[in-house]
Structure formats: structure tokens, C-alpha cells
Length: 388
Image (cartoon, rainbow, N blue to C red):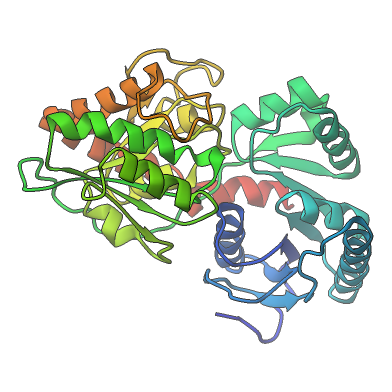
């Protein structure tokens, strides 16, 4: 969905750098950003590898054709070439602001500075390891501004990475999905629980698989669909078989636009170990689905319980303002069949939604209300102030 043509000389030139437009949460955020920014700015979307694009975008696509390399020497050469080409693009197109997503793109952005204002993005809760501290310090010092996707992530960067409060800002990702919510009927033949995300350890889907064992024992009609794919697919399939849940859990793989399927579900469950700002919660809210989520180190609390302190952590099933929060799981035991205490509470939260139809309907409505606060027209006001 490339948009070319004459540039509007009255608009500012903004570049967005992202590795690819092929799956991935940060990539989806960058693509959505291009769609909205193109209404206000001349957008140049710079990708390291433009193959297999799955997300719609707007602006002028510039493919560096420099995919990830293997080995230290080749990685260094690739980084140098990306920086060289990006700097040339900035100079040629008179770029005034450059926004980069993900660590490698942040490096390219800061080292290719020409006359542009450099804005780097933090999408996750960075752990304060020695390597991350050096990287975080370097990026923050060489950026004009660091943008975090959640206040929790911002406070983490200030507290653990020594970044000045004046140099870092929280701007929530916007969500612009138009899906008509379905009328929920918990008395129907099948109760549908859904999850969406990559099959990686951060997303924690194995906790949800185990929790469904307890849910299904009390509610045999309960069914779980996990949209996505990744390195842990085989592990999840083995655990599902071990728990004898093959007829209870479906994993249809990556679906480009699963929102109509999500809108038909009853409950969206997020079992993540860690997140940045979980867009899937906001997207599920747009679909009118009641939400239950772990209270992990991320923006989950900011979405579901915005009036509470961002660093508060629940130890019980918390009926928050816009959804249910449960304790986070902090283990990576993929094979265990018995439930941990946190998984037990996740199952209890799901069962509470199934049991209480009024609670389910209320949270479905509250999810829509909260998702509307992340509409582009609200978030773009913050960006327009920053890009003055």
C-alpha cells in the first residue's frame, strides 16, 4: 500500500525507521504510525528489509535491502551500511524529524543524524543488565528525545538507566481498528477465550494453556484460540497434548486481521511475563471483548487500572476499572502440568467472567470505553506538540 507522489511543501518531513513491516508488535505500531502521520506530515518509511510486507502503511517506502546479518564482522558492516544509506536519505529528503523503533534502528537513527531531530522509541521494559545500561545510556545521550510506550517503562528507564526526566516522554501507541462488537451470550454452546501474540517466552501462553485445564474442568464448553506463531509452537502443542486439551485449544497460526474473530469471542486473556504497552489489550477492547491480564511489569495496569499507581502489583484476582488483573507468573517451566499459584488465579479470573454474565457484559463495555481513549485523534495531539 505504497503512497507516492508530490510532497506537500507546507508539511514537515518525518522519517520512520523500522526493521521490517512483516509481523511483530513494534512493526505494527510503526505501520499504524505511518498511516496516521501521513495525514499531517510528509512521511518517509525506511525499512531495513522490505520483503513480505504484511501491514498496511502510508508514505514513501524506502527499502534499504539490508536484512540482518550473522557474525560480528558482518553485523558491523551491515550497521555501517544502514547508517550510511539512512544519512544520505535524511540529507536528500530534508528530513526534520526521525522516529526509530527497536534497538538496532535506534542505533541507525542516532549515528545517521544529519540536521534532523532524533527520536528513539522504547517498546519494552528493559532489564537493567550491564549491556542494556550501556545501550540505554548511549541512545538516551545521543537522542533528542526518548519516547516510551508506557509510564511504567519510562519510570524504569529513569530509575534503572539514569536517563534525565527532561529527555524522556511517555506517548501511548494509538489504535484505529473499526470492528463492530458482537452481542455476548455466555449461555451459548461454546465459551470462547482468545489470545494473540508471538509464541515466545515473554508472552507466556503456556500459563494460559495450563489455566485452561482448570477452567475446562468446571466449564467443559470453554475453548481457547491462540492466534500467532513462533519458536515455542512445538512446546505449546506438546503441553496441550500432555494435558489432553487438543479439543479445547486451537492454534490456527498467524492471521493478518484476526479482529473479527476476536470480536466474536467472550474473553481476551493475556498471560504475559513482560510487555511494553500490550496493544493486543487495546485492540481486544476495540472489539468489545472483556479482558483479563497478568499484572506484569508493563502497561497492562495502565490500560486496565489507570487510576492506580503504575508500580502497584496485585497478588489476588483484582476487579479493576476496565478489566481483571491477576498476578504475573515468573517461571519458564514449559512442561509442568500442575498449576502454579498465579496460574490458578488466572483460571479463577476466567471462571469468574464465565460465571457472572453481568460482570462479563460490563467489562466488554468498559473495554470499548478504554480503547477509545487510545484513538489517533487523542494521541496525535501529543505528537504534534513534540514535532513542532
